[in-house]
Amino acid sequence: MLRSALLAASRSPSLRTVVEKLPPTRTIIDRFVAGDALAQAVAVCDSLVASGCRVTLDHLGEDTLDATQATATAEAYEKLLAALKETGLAANADVSVKLSAVGQFLPADGEKVALDNAYRICAAAADTGTTVTLDMEDHTTTESTLGIARELRADFPWLGVVLQAYLHRTEADCRDLAGAGSRVRLCKGAYQEPASVAFQRKREVDQAFMRCLEVLMAGEGYPMLASHDPRMISHARQMAERHSRRNDTFEYQMLYGIRPDEQQRIVTRGDTMRVYLPYGQAWYGYFMRRLAERPANLGFFLRALATRS
Image 1 (cartoon, rainbow, N blue to C red):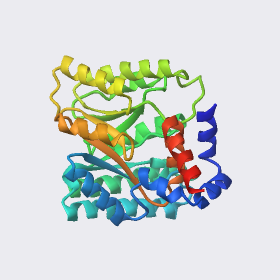
Image 2: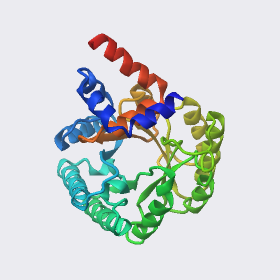
Image 3: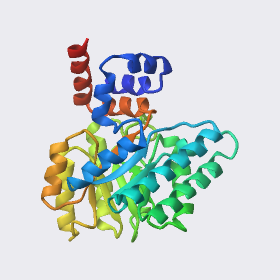
Image 4: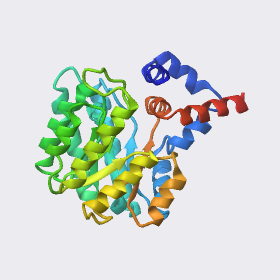
């Protein structure tokens, strides 16, 4: 019930206005978002890389219904990639792109616009010496996103994609994408989905996650385990050992601001740890989904409101 309410709130313009005006909001957002501006994101990226982590940067934005804005988002990624190249951070950085932010939902030729803009971003990444990962959104976009990914991989075989374990289809998608050179970020899923397409109970989702991860670990690709769950992290390491994987053939991923001590422990033991680092002004939907994912995040938010009111 709470998760459903928070996910519904993430789509509410009126509630967004209320949350943005709360005095402590900026302080709380700074825990999860690297700032509004590119320079702030690059500075945080530099700090994380210096600590031994790798980074994937997300210029926040989604559900773009304006072609001009979609183009502006692609240009923002080009500027980000140029900054990563200039600062020498590219080797330890990746960028995460939501196709909805670059035109996927435009009423006319949305998929073509998204493909063209994503191609621009991938070309800039190739010039920079880094990679791109396509984020996954709600289930209605899955087929479109994977179709665009297939087209992009013809020229950019290193392109990464995200798969969400709670969808019934994902185990089959993992088998399709477990080939040599394939980069797949596996997460549990952060959207409210119907029972017809997604597992609903936590235990079912956890079991689906483990089945999908087993497929990826047994394959020839590069699995990216996106989880903060200690059990999943422990199981992933056991799987890697069982499949004789070196620690440079897979990686762990966590969100910026969540379990930073664990992130450092993973780095210290010699494994690859990548931090998902969002930045930009369109932070509201991202922030509300983070609250929905973990009750501890909501508790943190409410305690901050109480102490700042």
